[in-house]
Image (cartoon, rainbow, N blue to C red; front, side):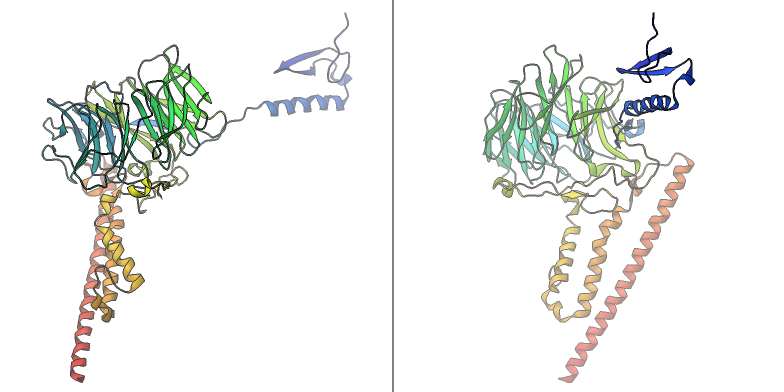
Length: 579
């Protein structure tokens, strides 16, 4: 029996053959000197090239190591009577000022509005917002006003509420506006993402109604538009980035993309192996993401092309649980969170415009099942801790609301600009009438860097805003705003007034310096360790120094104004003496 030839050097000497991924590499174990040096070099070169080409390519991402961190016991909200309603909604809405949660109430529907800093045990007699005659099914904060919230109920009405700036002292029973138009209970409401005072409501009468809240009437019965393209109950609504398109998931198993102003269905599709319950626009990628169930009743996720809903781009079974899946997309980081109802898991992925589209990152697991979740807007996150997302988890078995922070592990405590791109501001890009007239505009963008303007909502700028306008007008026209027309003949007073207004204009930025690590120094929790005590001491010293500087500036301004008045009086006396 003849020896096999070496496939590299074609010699008859005995060799052992290594087979890897379809390639046959030959390395001599006997008579190595029988082969020429060139042949041996070619052999090892081929092996090296193969090994280099075999190394797998890892995807680079800043969010590969994102982890979920549950808040400590003292940062949770305890003894909260969470609703027992089985509606497939979140039952919770959050903004940087308040957290609202649907609760149980005898003789009608109600929800609680708790200041975001009021953690710990809730008073059992805490005031409620209780103007509905039926169970409250959904609540949503106005994205441009932290003190306005909308609610819908089984009594077929939608109500708009004004929440006082301070803590509630008594029940609120009278709404700011009442929207009456649906024939059956209203299950979903959504604010427009860029236009001010535009609200969408969906009821069990299979209709979606568009409301313009700029109207002064307290009771509205005529919506500006009614969308009646659905033949069953709408389960989910989602807007694209500029609010020009609306995606819906319906109980008839169909996903639709609708032009809300024209009322026309642009795309409609259903897939036999996927029954969608929730649908979501994926930012500006022209894609839709849906969660639902498969033919075998497994929980399933699917990714769709916005312009072709006939076949999903991606379809994946997750598990065999029966709870609903809530999809939540963060357009700033391109991360997608899938929250399971009835379990304690939160899966998160990273979305890319090319295949494989969906990249699994990690899963946050907890033994406590969640009934719903609230989402904190980006302007309410703690950027000093590299927090990129925050959930408020409703745990009805414990009557508790537990904050969960998604954190990017970084050693530096400075502002991480690469994980905090420009995000949507708290000011509208359009008025309601402009949007109804057909104008489209993306959201206004703002930086999350501490001290930047535009982070807070419009309601929190009601006092500084006239000062800014007065300053701008005085700089452009030499007078106006708070400065009267007679001041044109008083240059020293005008100059002093401008300096005073500039200092007052800077006050909101100085007040923002009081915020440290997401809480106010004046309302901070009691330090428990020596390091926390030292940090608090240094912060208070810095605050005292800042206040002293402000007092000194005010003293200088007072002296300048007194000097201006004296000079003015002297000039008037000299003028009268000349006459």
